[in-house]
Length: 321
Image 1 (cartoon, helix red, strand yellow):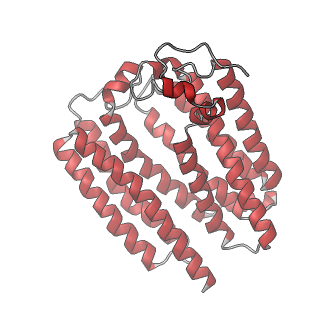
Image 2: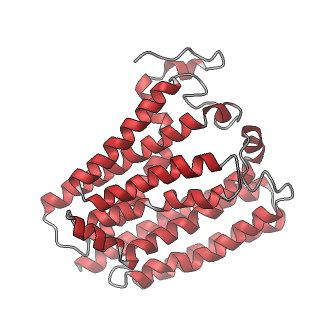
């Protein structure tokens, strides 16, 4: 596979990167890492309530991580392929492989399709069909629904939170067992959907804060996020505040849905940490500055991993004590 005809604005440092690394970059490795971790959180929490041999548990855990990661890389690569012209107009995304012509659109399209197919196939073959179908739903909703909607309506942020919230359900289905019946049964359980609800609500103040920080970029790219159509920031701040308030019950849902796994330690941490997050949302609502939005964004990055670590740690301790 040869390199694309290079963009004259491509930096020397970018040119020095191996071609394979450009394909990884096109798959948004930061997002893929988060997607894979949240899928494994769902896997661990489901597996704790299921009888597994150590060999099968290790095999399915690896397959879940690999299948989810490849599915995410594929969906993100297809997203960048579709948005390559808009990305080239925005300073925050102009360094990506496609705007810099480090890979061609055809290469990105082929890579995205192959990664998506292989990721779903691994999940279908090595976990169960329902985990694979949830992964497929992630890809389709992200690429075919969310991405085309972004230049059309601010509601795209709400729609985009759906594929972002589905990865824990991939792991939840996979961790329930290797049969189709086990996967389907998992989809009917409140535990997996409580993780979906937590992820769904968490994303909204997170993305609204990003949109406010980079509203000029989004305007240049032609994306109709709320911050672009809200010059005063009043509606954006109201949205951050509303979803941050809803984050309190959303973080408590796993405690209600999985009483055998999540106890008072998780519940107490969820309340205290989310109240701290809410404080920053109130600060942003009062002044609507970029530094305040950045504090909300950084707090969201810290809040979710800490919350999931406490949830998984307490679940493991309560199960194995």
